[in-house]
Every structure is written in C-alpha cells, then in structure tokens.
Amino acid sequence: MTDPAGRHDAWVRLLDDLAAEASGLREQATTTDAATTVAPWQEPAALGPLPGTLAARAQEVLAAQEDAITVISAAMERARRHHDAVAAVPRPHPAGPVYIDLRG
Image 1 (cartoon, rainbow, N blue to C red):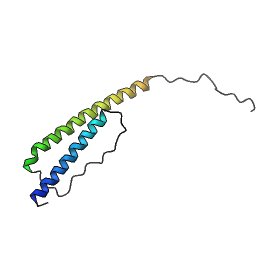
Image 2 (image 1 turned 90 degrees about the vertical axis):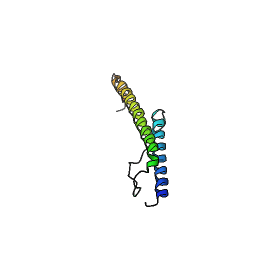
Image 3 (image 1 turned 120 degrees about the horizontal axis):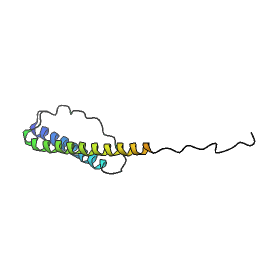
Image 4 (image 1 turned 180 degrees about the horizontal axis):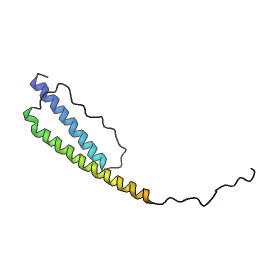
C-alpha cells in the first residue's frame, strides 16, 4: 500500500479490530457464555510498516491482548481445578441388576 493516508487508515482498522477481539475474549473469559471460535491470526497482506503516529495505539492494543491472555489463563486454570474436583468424586456403582427378566 503506497498511499500514506490509506495505509494509516488500514492500520487504524486493524488495531481497532485487534482491540475489540481482545476485549471480547477477556469479557467472555469472565462470564459463563458459550465459547466463540476465533480465527487463526493471518498477517494482513501489503499493510506496510506501522505508521509512527500509531505506535502508542499499538502498545495499548498489545497491553489489552496481554491482559486478555492473563484473564483467559486464569479462567482455564479455574476450569481445570473444577474438572479435577469433579473427577475426584467417586462415582456410585450399582449394587446389582436393576431389572430382572422373569419371562426370559
């Protein structure tokens, strides 16, 4: 992308999308809502280098992503502990047959 204004706008859109995704994932990790699938990261084509005027915004987005990772990791650890606790509860075993076939 050779147009500086177009490149700047493309970076603004990308940073906004990344910030929104981080915020949504962070919020989801703190609720009981159903999980959403996140598409794997794909580097945007022909975006060019980050304009210097957006460096501070990029740092904010990075901080938001790191915060989301921390919250998601904590939620995963809580889920693991809950799973382990449930798995540790002995399951009752039936004492014998529940039904008897008398007709046979």
